[in-house]
Structures are given as structure tokens and as C-alpha cells.
Length: 137
Image (cartoon, rainbow, N blue to C red; front, side, top):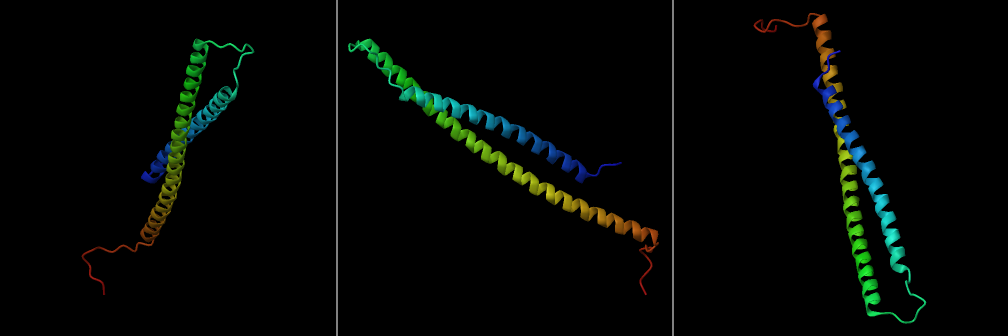
């Protein structure tokens, strides 16, 4: 069976939608990983790492402060990445919606084109066509 341009457009839209759905699943997996990392970082920040000995040296305090600053920096990076992923997910969902609308329009045009071809074939069967140079009476 010969494929017309509308069939090819539908195949192209199907491939684009499949690609976006794969990207969406990858983004959702990454989002869940980032949520796990954020949860772990928050737990690590909330833990009190006080030792039983009452004497703390300056280097210990400095190391703890540096560690906490590093954790806070990683938490901020995770939050920024999560926001970026949320934006990408929204864009993918809107693109999928656009593809669905385009597929509906393509199907509608395909049906219209098919009905025109059917009408044309019926007219040919009825021998309705007249030469162009003969005037109507």
C-alpha cells in the first residue's frame, strides 16, 4: 500500500512523541534521585555531630563548619537542578500536547483528502467529466 504524506506525518509525530516520552521518563527518574539526595543531605545537616568530649579544637570546629557549608552548597545545587528538571518536564508535557493536537489535525486532513478522492473516483465511474472546451447548455 502506498503511503501518502499524511501517513508519513503521522509516523513522524509518533516518533517525536515516543522520543519525548522517553525523555520524560528519564527526567522523572532523575527527579526521584535528586529528591533522595536532597532528603539525605537534609538529614545530614540536621544531625548533631557533637562529640561526647567537651573539649573541641579549633580545627575540628573549622572542619565541621566547612563540611556543613559543603552540604548546604550541594543542597542548593540539588534544589536548582530539581527546578530545572521540573521546567524540562513541563516543556515536554506541553510538546506532547502539541503533538497530539497536530496528530488530530493530520487525521482530519487525511479524512478530508480521502473523501475528496472517493468523490473524484465516483465521478470518474459515472463518466461525469466533460471536455473543458464544450460550453454548458
